[in-house]
Each structure stands twice: as C-alpha cells, then as structure tokens.
Image 1 (cartoon, rainbow, N blue to C red):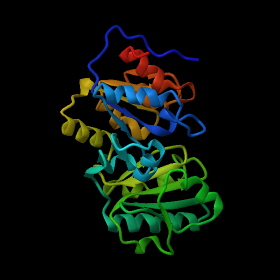
Image 2: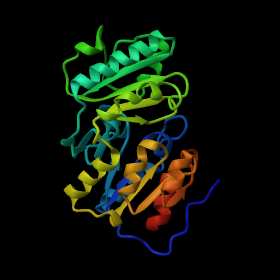
Image 3: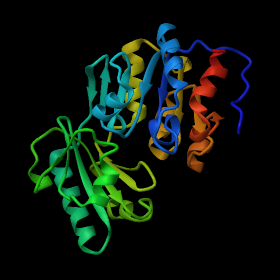
Length: 275
C-alpha cells in the first residue's frame, strides 16, 4: 500500500474538491466508511467540501446524502451550493441534437455505443437494452426513457456517450468534428462527454472559489482522469491518484495513494494532521 506524501507544513485549506469515480470511490463504486467522520471534521473546521464529478447532481446528492456541500456535477456544467444552483453552463440544443444524430450514424456503422442526454430536470435515453442501462443507471438517479432524444425539451447540460470499447480510440474520434462548437471530453475509459465549450471542472471550481472567497493556495483537489485536469490546475494542492491516467499524474503536483487504498481520506488526514 502506497503512503501519502509527507508534508512539512499544514496549509490553510478552505476548500477540498474531490472527483468521485476513480478517486473517492473504490473500484466497487463505494465510499470508504472512514470518509464520513473526516467529512464531519472538515465541515466543523469551516472547510467547504466539493464533490466534483461527471455524475448527475441527483446521483451525487443521493450518494452523499447532504446539502451542506458544494456539488460540481456533469463535469462542471452544473454547480449547486447548499441546495441552490450557483452556476449552469449548458450545451447549445442544436449542437446536442447534431451529436445525437452523429452517434446514431456511428452506431448504424456497427459501433456499440449509446447516448445519454443530460438535462436539468433529468437524464434521457432512447436505447433501453439491459447492457446499456446497466452502465447508465449508477450515474443517473433520474433517468427517463424517451422515443427520440432530439425531441426532448429540457436545458441540456451535456451529451454523454458510452462506448462498450475504448472511448479514446472509438467514439471520441467520431465526435471530433464537434470540437469547434463544443468541448469533446474523454471522461472515462468508456465515456465521452460533449459539453459547452466553457464547461469544465476547473471553471466550475473557480466559480466556487469566487463565491466562497477562497484562493487556489487554500484549495485541495483530487482527480484521476482527463476530465480532472482543469480542476487540478485550479488548486495549489493538486493530487493525482496513484491509479490516475498518465497525463493526470504528470499534471498534478503530488500523487496520492490509489482509490482502492482510500487515498483521498488518508492524504487529507496526513496533509491536515487529522487523527
């Protein structure tokens, strides 16, 4: 088991931003029980805790069960503080419809892919086989089946595309044509998110810092995948998980133990000298 880095000083931390999948959650998508007393200790100290994820806000709220947190959901397209919306950075609806059509065409060519249209009110799918839904349901507590995604009327936060093969070499190149109108982000081994050009965990975290009056030097961030790079840039105390993508490890200032080794909790305890 890898040890957390050793620190000579205890920083004045006011904000902790933590990615979920591959960072706070273990490989079975569970929160280690030791996180809950640590969370209470951080909040009692006046430290704002910010789960920052590609997951839907309703999913994060259900999993963490608290309103006294700042949630960065949908990879930065939605920020909710103390139960109130702080920021929204939605995707142009016409672009979203074009992305849906492009993925349909990619699937018609033989690719095993599916689309989740992520809106403010809910997430929506038109593919409803068990294999695809099994990949979607852990991330979307609010998920509706509709006959036509292009007919959905909702504020679009992003279009999430699941590729049963490697997304980075599969569906991502097929969506590259949208790079001028949107941000095409490989957010996991099998997921690609198409978002507003300015939607990013880093931009969202800076919105949170501005709202709280917190500086980068007072911010800790943990991440493991390419969608976490902007968030790590916004924090002086930036940690890549030991299991992180190589580009993320190279980007962060420090490396924390892996998600399987409860690296977030153990590193925060070491950094802040918590029991």
